[in-house]
Length: 151
Image: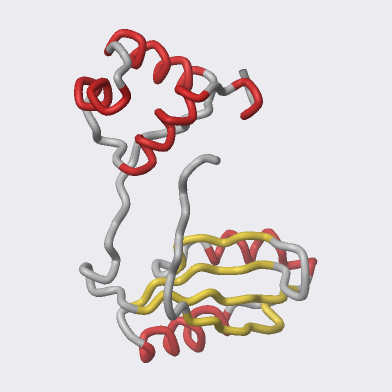
């Protein structure tokens, strides 16, 4: 089982429940779904075994941790420096992800900082000093509307 076409309604319901709360106990999940606990254990184990579920994790409220600014930074790079640039970027503390993309940028960075001054510092003292980054454009997140459920 490697694709969504082989998932049934119960698999999708389990995945959606676990997306909302990956720490939910099997007995509570059983009450919510009306499915026997042994069936749920078996289904979840199968989803993990088949790498549909890769890990159970937490979701941080970064604002409560003091990181109130989330920014996306589009960057353009010189191709000959690509590997070196990506290796440097993933080691910048404030950068949560680096995604190679299509379009007018070569990559989009997701950055969390405490305030706009910190963002300015990351851009000017860290990103702009990486050899081979030729352009940056900053997009500050104002509001996030998210839908993580499996359709």
